[in-house]
Length: 88
Image (tube, rainbow, N blue to C red; front, side, top):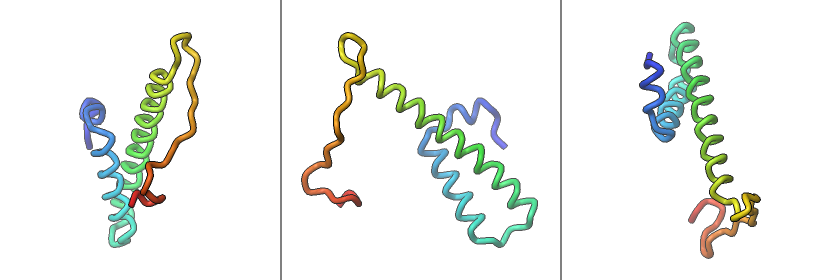
């Protein structure tokens, strides 16, 4: 188990990758109950950590997108030309 300081130094991508690995292990279903519960708990922690990081990023973006009077500036997202919904 990682210490709180180690959790804070982990990047969003690292946390997401660890969460994906836990999901794969749980989906395989070849684990004893206690190990499954332990992985599930770790997964919940990672999921919450990722959600918090996404929320922080969203707040930072909202601050950056304010006009010079501090009012939020909203604009519709435009898909880049030539890309479909799968990014191809």
